[in-house]
Structures are given as structure tokens and as C-alpha cells.
Image (cartoon, rainbow, N blue to C red):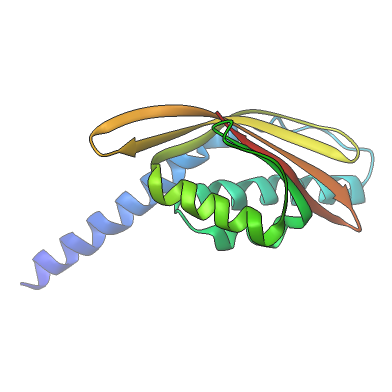
Length: 157
């Protein structure tokens, strides 16, 4: 019995690391650069961390990963139905409804770009509705001010 429990535990740990490794495997979507100084490196490390948190929010269907990065207003374009600037609380409700209906199968970034006060990523939101499986293009942009990266817009089409 102890052997069986150990095997189950080991299998669970391996699966956990494989899932985590698959999400951001070697961060191919984020090209590392050399920076002029430490503060610039820290700024872009924070940007990368912010994008990872947002991805986790979609991947785990948990708005609490996203809402710390909402500014007063967020531009959403969700399937071209919900399109415009929304308050952070409205954006939360729209994204919760979206994620509840379009059950995520996988969420991954493909490429990114970053500038002094602006950054964006392109990715794929793979979802399931009933037995149908499809993909949406995902674009997320961030803006930087007051030493923090905020979600500027989210597009899911």
C-alpha cells in the first residue's frame, strides 16, 4: 500500500512539472535581451512576470490572476461582441462570463514585443464548448507607469 501511495505521489509531481513546463517551456515567446542597467532589467522582468500571471488567469480560469493588473479602464475586444473601454469591474464580469462559457483547453503565448512604456504578446486561447474545440487569437498589451505594468487591452478573436 505504501508503494502504491508513493507511486501516485511521484506521478502527480511529474505531471505537475510537465504541465508547468508546457505552459512556458523555455519562454520561447519572450526573447531575452541585454539591458543597459539593472533597473531596466528589473522593469522588463516585471513585465514578463505580469504576462505570466495573466496567462495563468486564462489557463486556470481565475480572474484573480488578471484583476491586479487592471487599470481604471481596460479596452476589451472579445469575439467582436464586447468591444470598447470598460471599468475594471465591468472587464472582470465580461472576462468571467467569457471564460465560463469558452472552457479553456490551453493558453499559450507565441511572441512578444516590448518598448519603454508599452509591451504586447500574441498567443492562442484554445477552448472547448460542449464537444467542439477551437482556437482564438489572443493579443494582450500592457502599459507601464508608476513602476507597474497595467493591462491596456485584451483582444480575443
